Length: 631
Image (cartoon, rainbow, N blue to C red):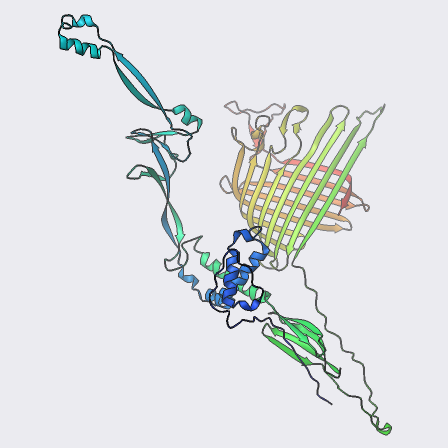
């Protein structure tokens, strides 16, 4: 057996530098790139790239991919990544010690005084001076009859002649208030009580002070922030948990960078053929290579990657290397060779971490009844019901996060000869839920649920005054809590902290009191807890029962009174497209009250004359044969 030559050639990029290309280099904007790369040293090359990055006229737009790549190359040259990593890991994040500290925020407003006690805020450039100058010429006339007898004196006569027709000019300056109002500039007056009108709203916690020369007003505001220790590189932090969060984020990115970073390795044979092999931080399975010598003899080796900085070579089991030679016919050995029956190791497929699933289902039910000269009486009618449901679900296996959004539109009507077109079913629901897995059966959950209707609703037979319409009323609930799945197809979502808002946008036509909202208001706010139970089970073949129970308790108003919204849907599959459906919907809300009637059907009144009202169970039921389609 002769030895086999194994050659491993590693191709690494290198930088050639010239001995005379050292020292600092200065570049002007008109400098060109040298033709010979040996004219650069690493330091001068970094200076040149930095100079190009600072030239705004060189780049077509900011944030160009080429400029970003050059920036990362320049930063990596300035400081190796290992130095950054070491400094980040050695930093004492516990030394920040953030404390709640009172800080003062200052702002200044320039002033322009229009008088001793009147000023404006000089933040808007005015096209002209906000003053009006008025000149008045006054002529002095003297009645000489009053000076009778004195005008005969020569000196007095000269004085009288000099002042008889004397003129004075009176200059008055006014503030041009109309011009200031056209420019939306407000004037302020300073008096003993302060500044009027006030510069700040009454509820403002800010303070005002004039500078000593009264040219500016300083507005100060005191607030509290978490301030880190003065020896740390941080000033204001988001909270006491910021140092721990920052440390976790740095460690996660360093770990991810170490995993993602890889080194290319090329394995070459004497004939110039190259095979690529990447060194990563993930210990991959062994890869098979055939190694040849100059005589074209080959053997099989396995190359492994235990770590990023290590490779492992294994020779194929049961390798026999032989050469052909001239031997006598009497000495030819007979060798029985068995074929290689070992199974090759397969590389498992990588699972896609995040996937989307979409679903759309529709159910349509139509009932028709026609009568003509029917002796027993009756009425022709046509009834229909449309139920559309759609959902989009996102699941990420790595992060164990799921996000499900669904919508439902249920609309039904009936047409008869006597009453015409009527709506008897109208529901629009939207739901979005984000879950983060805690363990196998419990998730942290955040839920949004909204419900309203599309068309106007009436209290038949009165079809002139609507009692509901789109977003009147409307309800949405936001909650956070946990979701527990005790067994398959059953989920319990408990939102210990929930907020429910019921609103009526059009209070001019819709009576909000009929939907549990106080008179004179448009909304009802409730803070409480919510429990949602969803269950689906199959009793027999093709017989399915779905339960959806929604319970809500208001912590701030009689928490023992629980609002109930319970919907039961029973379906029996009779063919591929058709099912028999029974839908039962029950609602009990203590805030929705109905008039109390006596035995004759008249409203019962209270001692103050107002009608007596009380909550009641609301019930809706549907039975029919529907045509359904799901994709």
